[in-house]
Image (cartoon, rainbow, N blue to C red; front, side, top):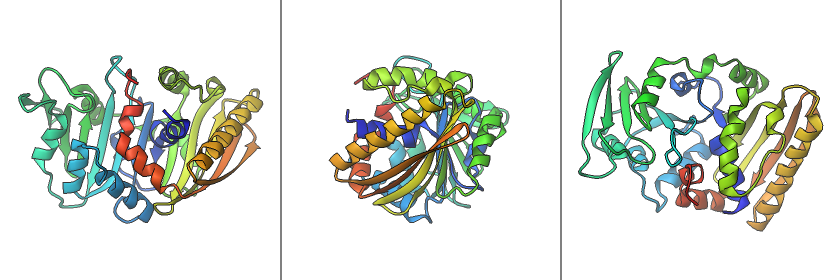
Amino acid sequence: MKVIVTICVLLIVFVGVMAAQGTDTPSYIPESCISVVTMANIQSDPGVSWMLDAWINSPRQSPLRELLKATTVKEMSVAVFSPKSESLLNLLCVMKLEKGAKVDKEKLNNIILPDPEATIQSLTYKGSSIAHVQGDVPEDFSAYTILQDMILIGSDVDVVKMGIDGPSINKSAVYQKAKNYFTQAKDGLLFADNSGAKFVEFLQPLEEKWKITLLLSSEYLDWMGSSFDMVDSNRASGIFVFQGADTSHIDEIKDDAEFLGEAFKRKFIAEKINYTSTVEVKGSSVVLNMQISGIEPLWKKLFEQGVLTLIRPGGD
């Protein structure tokens, strides 16, 4: 796997994303998640809406994509939790629909059905009906519930229940620290929680899968975050912050930021993508500033390959 694709997925999928002020779907994302990616302004922002359209129209087949084709979604969050097995992801997807939008139950069922012969059953939990697959479950999603204008789709019933139960990531002290750092978030604010070293523990087996070490200083980080702006299909800009627990290992953290900046530069140039960056130290934080243009072909390549294949446990 090319390093450029790996790093892009690290920025977009691994790292939790909380879009600019006013997002609603994180309210159903449990604070126990390792990461969450939220795309807001899906219909109105030119960059975000292009990304969604490009994914929907990519050749790769996806039941989730088919649902998005038939449903007007305003906002979507996908959270990643510690895997329960060596081969299955542990995910929760939360979608907010346009007011009055109808839900296509058949397409929802197709997302969680592993094969046409499987059966869907339902259970009631705290007043909500959860549909789920009985027996063998598919690789990504096997249960869902509808809560007014929200759809929660999970890897299993347990993670859907967690979304109903809370507490949400909005209650996380580390999340609030990152949120307060980025007062002028644009299309989104990326956030990765390393409290209790949970991001480090999640990253290690993936680095083995990819055969690359991305962050030598990860054990010294409190959190990571990024404010980003998808200008259009071809241009993006943003800042990536590595927040140290203190200043004692700031040089190691800076080295990692510079390494990633140079890795971006080399690989983007190889893909004929324009990229510039700077690195600066601010107290116990290291900030990587980025400007990217000509990125549209890479997005299409990523969507055709399938984003979740890059973080699914096991496999190549």
